Length: 213
Image 1 (cartoon, rainbow, N blue to C red):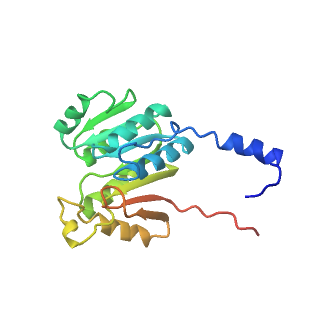
Image 2 (cartoon, rainbow, N blue to C red; image 1 turned 60 degrees about the vertical axis):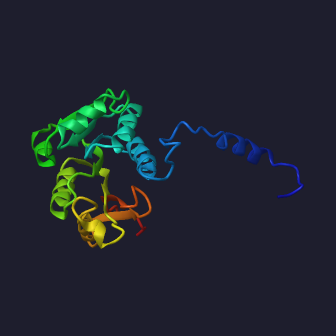
Image 3 (cartoon, one colour; image 1 turned 120 degrees about the vertical axis):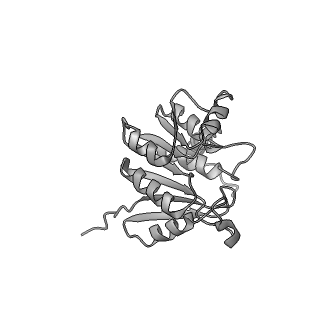
């Protein structure tokens, strides 16, 4: 810091930038960065910058975030879950799903086979069956309907130990993460200490920037 008089231009810039509005980002006061905090923040960024709707494979706590974001940006969000009881229980709580939510019960394979998407998908979230085989099918099905600039998020991609690789826990989704990491077609980044400490991976098609002639 300095005792010199403030620079008028810098003061005006600071006053403009530092007028913080905590309501603009989707951030749980209770969980902050834990559980789905990172997913909420990143989803807000993706949907605000990429045209298209939202897909959620596996309904739970994440649905609250996606329902809010869908209404905020006037997008549709397709919530798919194998168990009707899960969907039905969530409907008893006002706000869990929003006016832009579309509930789809059945396997994710059935969901992609039967659903007619009106718009490209800006964001997909995969948190259904935890086997490598099904996660890969979900990943490929998501990309078949994605906006080319969209993002796919995957849960359970960084199990803490071998015990977490049981299918009733994080399963073998980590194998898909390793496969994508080796694929030059995609860019992937995995957040390890979030999403119930099971790992959250963010994937998009690799964009080759202009590097000059």
